[in-house]
Length: 221
Ligand SMILES: NC(=O)c1ccc[n+]([C@@H]2O[C@H](COP(=O)([O-])OP(=O)(O)OC[C@H]3O[C@@H](n4cnc5c(N)ncnc54)[C@H](OP(=O)(O)O)[C@@H]3O)[C@@H](O)[C@H]2O)c1
Image 1: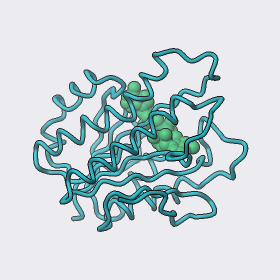
Image 2: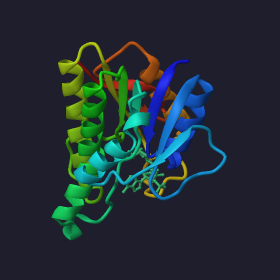
Image 3: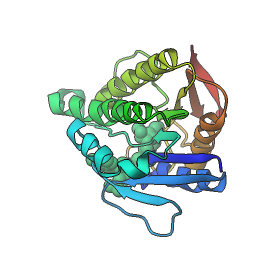
Image 4: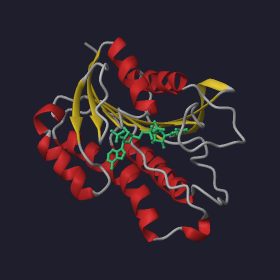
C-alpha cells in the first residue's frame, strides 16, 4: 500500500481524476466532497465545507479518526472568483484566500501535529509565480501566489516532509475557461500531481501545460 491520501475537492473535475489515478496506484483514498457525493468512484468519502477557518476546524474534528491515517494530502479544492476587477469586494479576496491558503495550512498543520504527514501537494494555476496585472481572476491569482509562498516555506521548515505545488493551465471542461490557452486534459494534470506526490523532491513548483505535459519546474528551493 502506497499510503492513505486525502484529496480535497475530490468530487470536482481534477479531483475525480486524482481519485481514480491514486486508487489505481495503490493508495487508500480519503476523498472530500462538499455538496456532490459522486457515485461509482473508489475511496472513502467524507463531506465538509472548507470555505472558512471555522468550517475547516469542524471538518478536522468531525473526521479526525479517518484523517489521522492520512500520510499524503492533495489540496484540489480552490475557489475561484472571476468577477471583473471593478466589481471585487473584500469578501471575494477572503473567500479565495481562505479556501486556497488557510484551508491547506490548517489541514497540513493538523496532519503535522498528528505526526502522520509524508507528502503534500497544493494545486496552483499556471500563472502562479508570475507578477502581472489581471482584469479577472485577480483574487484567485493573489490566493495561489500566497499558496505558492506557503508551500515553499513549509518545505524549508520541514525538510523531512515533502511539500510541492503543481500548477496546471486551464483544464478541458473547466467552469472558468481561458480563451487564450489550449485546454489541458485533467488526466495529464492528475498524473503530474500523482508523480510529484510519490516522488522524492520537495520545494518544487511544477507548471503543467499542453506544451509541457510532464511539467516544467517554475520554482525550486
Ligand atoms: N479547472 C481549471 O481549469 C483549473 C486550472 C488550473 C488549476 N485549477 C485548480 O485545480 C483545483 C480544482 O479545480 P476544478 O476545476 O477541478 O474544480 P471544480 O470542478 O470546480 O470542483 C470544485 C470542488 O470544490 C468543492 N467545493 C465547492 N465548494 C466548496 C466548499 N465551500 N467547501 C469545500 N469544498 C467545496 C466541490 O465539491 P462539490 O462538487 O461536492 O460541491 C468540488 O469538489 C482548484 O484549486 C483550481 O484552482 C483548475
